Length: 427
Image (tube, rainbow, N blue to C red; front, side):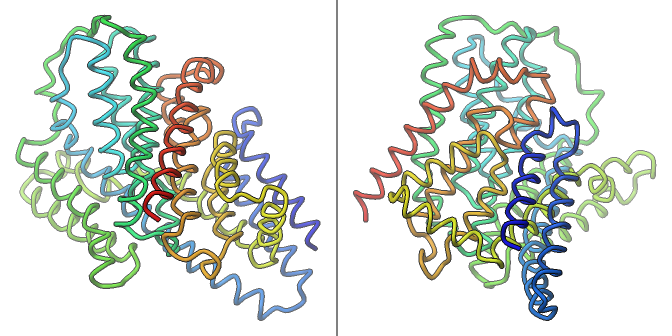
């Protein structure tokens, strides 16, 4: 049974990693893998009650992550439908590419920490089309945006899916991850920015012909600001909600989603149906990336089988025996996330090591949050942010590896060194 389960998982993993050349959605591969794994486990186990108990326990943990992601994605879509992010992006003005690079990097870094790296990448890459006329400048900026978004998402529990998984699973807490990983994440962004700004020098910003966008705005200034503040307030308030009530984060995000829905309905109460349809939360639900949601369901349920059959714990023991050093093992996990998706890697890590061995906020979990979050920037297929930028600007895989990959690797290693040194100084 264990051999069959391991082979099925490896094949599913390869299908996910080779999504683009195979032309098969990684969501389909993840669901197929999960279906086959649970089928083999059920047929080979012989203990129906135990298999069902394991399935129910895995489903409960998966559902918490899925509900949280659906709520967060919907809130962001509502804010975007009201042009709420215009309040942030309209303030970015400069005449030099190097100055613009620094501004875009810092805005992306902190916006990603509040929203998430995927959404922030989409917003910022779209903004570059309004600020930069030359495509070679835009794709270069898109690469830096990917690095900054992944770095910003690694130090907050809501900034990256993998950090959210660790937070909901109890491996990290809000204040500890923010305090411990912030400096390392910042360094992983600053190093590429410093190198890039020297390369760009004093090159000027060549902006596209300006158009009057006032007539194309879908909401009033009051509506934009209200929905932006309310949306960001709900997202930032979820960790506070969890700390005060001790309820799972998905309850906080769903509670906030209900408030946003009610405010939106009241805000557009007197508008005609045709004018308010695209502003409603119902419309926002149709715009969230359900393919990614389904992928998370499939991969988390697939990894759960490896956990229940003790394959992951055996792998952890083998790594400890062969490699030995915990920091090197986590660095390898981070580098691997550049080649394959970081979601299954972190899910596997959560199954490999228990909270009894490594308590909440221990070195292992915090370092995994950093490495898995930032390591995916080294290749454009290594993170959801990279894949989004690749689609928006049609960035070539090898161009990114040549121009951006080295910058991302330098930042990744510098940030990792900072975290290890910082941990040893204060522990």
